[in-house]
Length: 309
Image 1 (cartoon, rainbow, N blue to C red):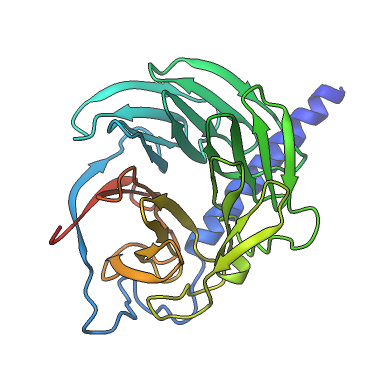
Image 2: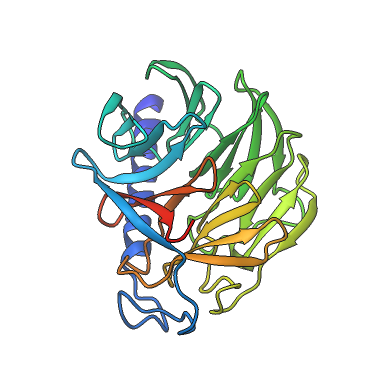
């Protein structure tokens, strides 16, 4: 009986989470009257362009990661797939029992998250380990790895976990001040080699650098519509660390941009687009020269390159 109750409770949590994400993606956004609305100054152009699109046909697209050797990993409603850099061939595809929320790759290992678990997959597509479920009410929205640790962001409990490669929890950030403020289920993390990490504290519209225990080292970002700011209630919705800085993606005003290591604005990747305002694109880049963006709204993977490299 207890197992049945636990099973029903898990199903209920999943349905509530899915319902919330659907609502969050379709609810009206104040001050964004049109799908392709842009607040970019007329003299500031997008410096990147879409050079390729890949349509996902077998399930909704949610996440993207890219390796240093050019492999592109995508995940979504019930799958993880490894594509070549040209996106024209599939090396392997793995079906999952539950939706994939985030992906990260380190060396020859792929890390995927579901709502409450971490999946470990080798380069051939073989599942080699899985960890979790973790805290009750866990909603994993982002995952990252270095040589010795894995970090994941739990939007349900507003926590960042750092675990070892055996799945043992080493530290949890967010239980004590300064806490994370999350108006919606967008919460990205990127683990550094020394186990400190970058994290999007979206309610404050900023990216923070924190040590493994959760203390803030530095931060950047402020609220606003200007290209150097983050607009709306909860941004940046997604970010990726690249050589020399960051790629960030926003919701509400759906734009992708480049910031330097200090968080200063460098250039726009995409601002004059027709992406759904309330559905931000997950972003990934290994070299800062090619940006991959996964769009859950149309289940397309977009490839961006600089117009004048």
